[in-house]
Length: 471
Image 1 (cartoon, helix red, strand yellow):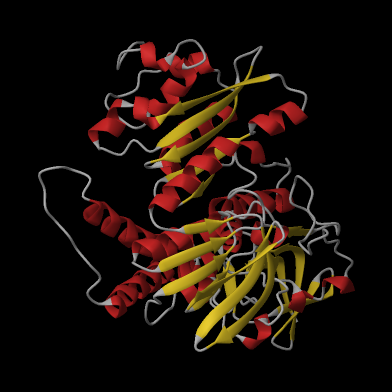
Image 2 (tube, rainbow, N blue to C red):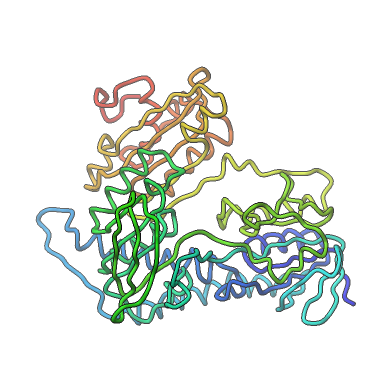
């Protein structure tokens, strides 16, 4: 039997952050790879079948859109996809190079961490079975991630469907695609395929896309996506799917009215499920939530003392950067003296559509539900000088503040580079800043980052009455 101080089950963002922290501390550690996400080899979901390949293709699609949209007068230019296979080969080269440089190479430099490629299962709270061998560890971290959840749809088992994994490995572009799901994943793929010239129909169960976001952000982003030719249908109840004459045929109803949609492909973006089947968690009594994700406390410890969990296997929010932070903090809590927690309220998230959407903190509704009397002000990008300069005035910022203290509670942005712009607001919430702190900070003119200052100024002034640099 091999014995270690620490066993890290997983090999994605959370697992690597934990291994790096353990190595720095000189903790004898074993990292055990493999999980049920087929495409998530060393490095996990993000680098292999998630963020890295999808954002490469999204960037390419956005470039096509910027060129072909002909935003500026007096210019004539047009481009098209010449060789889709080369695009996918280039994407795969990026994935392989990052997997090597950021994971395999990094792993090879860790002096106190051994990597074992195999599935792990619990024999008891300190013993894991891996490849038929026993591994004992004083502390264990579960970081096995999650994979696409397939909804119950009549006929789904009789057709070929796509998840994010298959969609990122297509050998040829379809002419049409149905995407089921109107949250981040579904919206990103809808925009990606639309920019690549695919006819896209997106079906969303709730009455709007991004139902947990501010309604203004959801509304305007939906309008922008529709302008890109995406057919968005909300309030959908799916009835059945089949294949007729080579096409996917999906029947559904909208407020009781029967409808159908046909396409060459169908992509399911209907949530994630945890990779826990092979772990034998029942053997040690680890508690799960109603959706099957591992329950943890604020210090990332499970219901079993000495066993921690981090990343997507613990449920929402499922973010690569958060998973890494959790892996790091879990290791500190397992072996350090002082316990540390993560303030989820200051963790940002983004949707990489075009324009992007990003958020941090509380929404207007959440603040009010918490008994906070808040004030909210949406400010449009058209009021921003830089938006006019780059000739893309789509978007808005909505800032939620405590009406009494003026402290910033939440911010959502939809607009060019929103995923980058949100970080000023992240710091504002993390360090409990007020709108006066933002206003008193000099912002470079002309930049898109001024939208945050305009959002703060809007609580004192009508933005239409201000000059470009009023304070």
